[in-house]
Image (cartoon, rainbow, N blue to C red; front, side, top):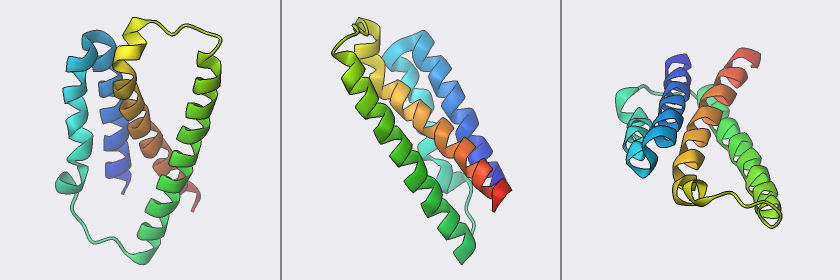
Amino acid sequence: MNKTYSFLTIVGVIGLICVSIFGIKGMYSLNLGFLTPFIFKHQADEREKLLINKNYSQVFMFIFVIFINLYIISNFVEFGAFLLRNWLGFFVSSLFILLGLNGLRLLKNE
């Protein structure tokens, strides 16, 4: 599990860098994150399944809070054309980073 969450964090950082530099074309690097179940195959026990569910629920709750605040801020701040074109790449990269870091935190604490 540590390898999986570390891999997701690394893929998220690489994706964030690639999207920042190459724009929409940089999103191809994020395909690595979606291949995670095929790269790291193992039978999860019940404790690991609970941690995975807890990780996803916490991260998605945090992402929704960020989206709500960004929507409110967008009424007052102009984000620019680059961010309007590449928001999905930044979102998916951030999602991978948060999934990885929160998963490592949960594994360490529980």
